[in-house]
Length: 181
Image 1 (spheres, rainbow, N blue to C red):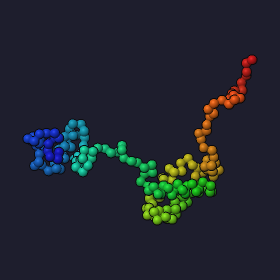
Image 2 (tube, rainbow, N blue to C red; image 1 turned 60 degrees about the horizontal axis):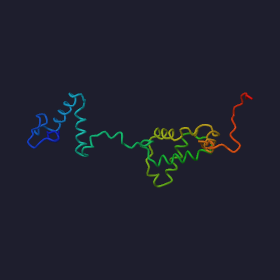
Image 3 (tube, rainbow, N blue to C red; image 1 turned 120 degrees about the vertical axis):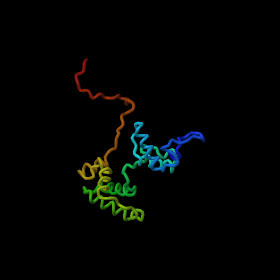
Image 4 (tube, rainbow, N blue to C red; image 1 turned 90 degrees about the horizontal axis):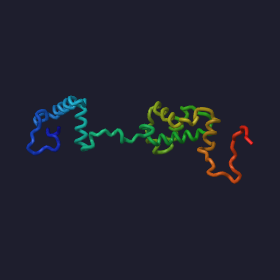
């Protein structure tokens, strides 16, 4: 489409009339979109133009779909320093009385303002901060019962181990049914 010839053609080859060098790039993009649509691959001229620009800038891999290999953060576009500060605030709240979300958000902002790096961070909208808070406090009982929160935070951690071999005295079966003699 750039030169009017498909890749791999010889030096003396002539381009098809709709892709000839006398036509503007916009007209050739529209012709390519019409050709793709006619073969069963619907495409708009703007899509063809976008892929052409990516091809010119990045080469063969430019027009490829990069969504499967794009790195995705678990917390979206929120700065990692905000996530660290909010996790610290949540950890501080484990042994304290039950707090509301507004208190956690306020304390997160205070922690960020204590360091020069934190002061450079621009906080996202309040709604985004509440979404982040919901992700970080999922299954932690941060806003629920203080007893449950503390016991979950300081209790035993699983998985619990099963003995790998029988003791010298043998394992006791917990069956309490009738015993045949």
